[in-house]
Length: 399
Ligand code: PMP
Image (cartoon, protein in one colour):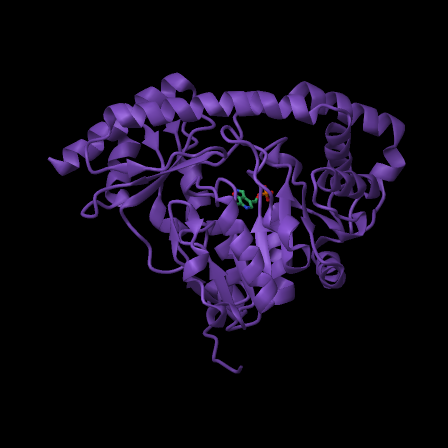
């Protein structure tokens, strides 16, 4: 298409770049880095939960035993033993995966970009939950799709409301069935089955983004949509929330015929993910460290989540509702419809409490009376104090 692109500053930017915007979230996180701030804003692991000693020890071991292999260029698909370990874990958990279907990515954010590069054309129909992950909207937007927000409730997507006509011809459906960012909700088993069935019937590709699935605090894990329809799903996983986000190691699992194209996109993007951090993830993953580490994370976050829920119950005025997450990092608050979370944001920041206004998480038509609270980085004392402050600010607006 030959649309006129006006110059921006000195440069005649590509249309794609003109449409890019800063993530409202990342801009906001800068403000919340103030030392005196109680932050419910970022979706970060608790700094106290990063396994520092283990990572230092493993890094030294890798560099003293396999420095050349680590520091040379490696395969675009990723470090083979890590791909094998991921495939083996999925297979052991009842979802047979071959190592050849695993592509290691530079965080799952890169996986979102690769999937978008390979599948989205200008005007492609991309189906998303309401609300959805802002970073996915950002990654997909570069390729200029038309987003369609799908009907969703407190349990997530509502498959009964998806018509085969709507699904047919769409280029992909993006979903996070486990402890969604931003709402914390989890898709029930029957809805996963319905979604898998619908995607097999209509040929629709499901992109199942699952960085929070291992952080389960109540009710045990549920099977992935990938396990129900492996040929119709690209599954995205990450070590960011269970190990350390700064390692930038994630992965995708794709049907073999799509893998070819995803690997070509990966090559064009960064040749391969860093050899050192892939090896660190591999060692930690295979040395029996991950399971106890996960249990410790689950215990810590379960308590923080419970304290936040209890504090909301004590301090929020009538008319305010919130999700009751069974895992993950987030809780979603809905205010009475006359209130906007943006209006509360200023007052909350002045009082030393940060959160993310929910409007940031809609691909279209935002709901302004919503907000996201993360319970992972604040201490339980800070959670009590911060929620009390928020409750006071909301009550003042309602009186
Ligand atoms: N998907 C979701 C739903 C996320 O919340 C995040 C991180 N906030 C990512 C993907 C990207 O994570 P990473 O690149 O660190 O693996």
